[in-house]
Length: 106
Image (cartoon, rainbow, N blue to C red; front, side, top):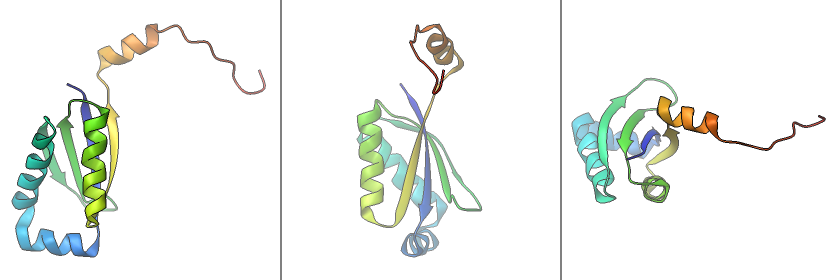
């Protein structure tokens, strides 16, 4: 199953919710969210800085991943960014692909 890195930044109201529920409460909510689309959360990390939360999850496909991001962002208490994670073997496969390309100005 594909892996994704989901990064979330809370709004002020979102941070108030974290203060009320705690980190474990939010982690449980994220686990339920990802499980609802057929996925599994590997890890949830809270962090300092511009990004408040990092989630590593297995999600069935890009459509399910997009549904997660849309749902969270539409709720208005956090903004998400999603990165598709690739294994070394997937990069090997990509490197073997025959691709036709001309660089600008070449």
